[in-house]
Image 1 (cartoon, rainbow, N blue to C red):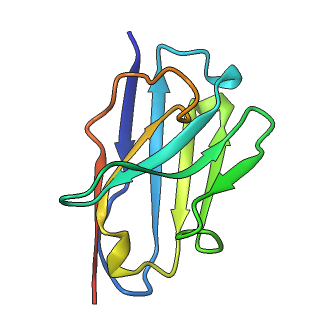
Image 2: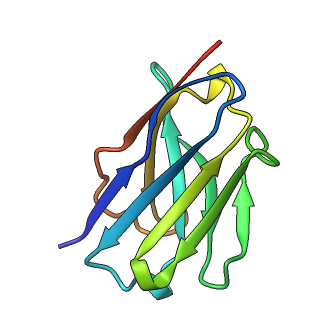
Length: 116
């Protein structure tokens, strides 16, 4: 059974940093492209960053230069290092596969709140 478990969210002030983790089980992790998404209140879920099996990364323009996605195949985990956080980054963050892959069951996500 596929399971995605996100963690690491919290409340920080503008300019702060957080590191999110997502542990995936029930998939062939090392051969899977993976991604982070976020959903702010009243908005649609959006792609934040993705990483393929060669560790080639993609970032949404809103987070490029501030966020870093990485993966640890031995730990079945992807990470999202977030720096210079802004109130606009406030959202629930989820991991899954990139939009051009068949989506996995969504996890519960992890809440990130940035206050000014």
